[in-house]
Length: 65
Image (tube, rainbow, N blue to C red):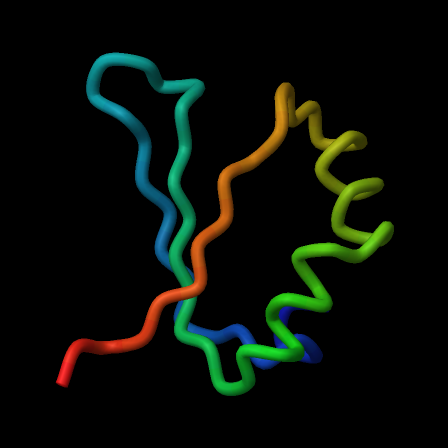
């Protein structure tokens, strides 16, 4: 699912103060595919099944020149 969206090289970080606060970063090959995946019902359903609470914050970044 993640590779099909063009997302690779995942890194998972946990907040020092709140281990339930998690940040996940990926490299992104195609911003349009990544945005479509982020808005997909499949991702929402998967996160619900995994127990994600609240609405995730998603940002799409590019390296600075």
